[in-house]
Image (cartoon, rainbow, N blue to C red):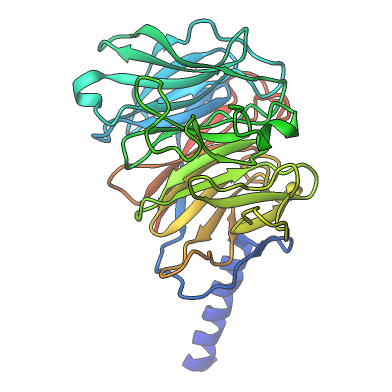
Length: 366
């Protein structure tokens, strides 16, 4: 074989290998791929920590030395070292209960001023509904449980639950419609919204409706993350037609229940990308190197959606690890590194695996 033929054969083998490792779903729709920002792609995945039971939320300490992780159904909170070798339970969240579906101890956010106050914020289900609460880590355990916001309606499903601090220093929370779509369009309801509040649990100043609501028209949003430009990206479950990735702006209406996916109704804001529900059912999202990463439960894959430079469109979504690790729940950017933490929740109701069967993976971006 000539050297030219050898090179061609090697190139063909490499292309086949890449095609085998990376899968595309034909049912994805997105804006045209114009002015795509340079961004890497996942090049390695490794097991970081095992023995978990529905690890729902992950939030890093600002110094990047450790992360706080919640487990949904037993209400436990853990502190995990960056290398995954040190895993320590630091408490449980009082007054928590499950809903027999998707409620329980959900999102977690570490205070940006962690070095000074050691505050940890959680969203969880209680007897009267879903709450946002704050606790303090004293170096050994969590103490001082304080309710910041209550009255978020709960149901077996559609509880939302993700928390994240924005670059403005305020706490953002996603809430589901509690299986009552009308709540998502009610500006005075806490449900079917992205909320924005202060660290003391008050409505953040400048909110568009003069209350807690930052945006409305959400069905069951379980993923929020900010990009390098301070923009808020959000993923949510559709009903039977389309799951969504939205670019969230204050006061915008994202359509539910009038719209599911893209529509032409005046006053509704369309998503930046959509998926058939079998290919996604998205939970957590993270932004690394100019791309949104979205964990998929029913779809059992990690989606990468490149963010275009110079406009508000996104590029063509691409899927990784399809079917390899089961239901993927939380994806979190590692501070100061081109890496992600990715969790499974195969021990949940739909996964059907035994307690302790879930895993935290470390994904390296090339």
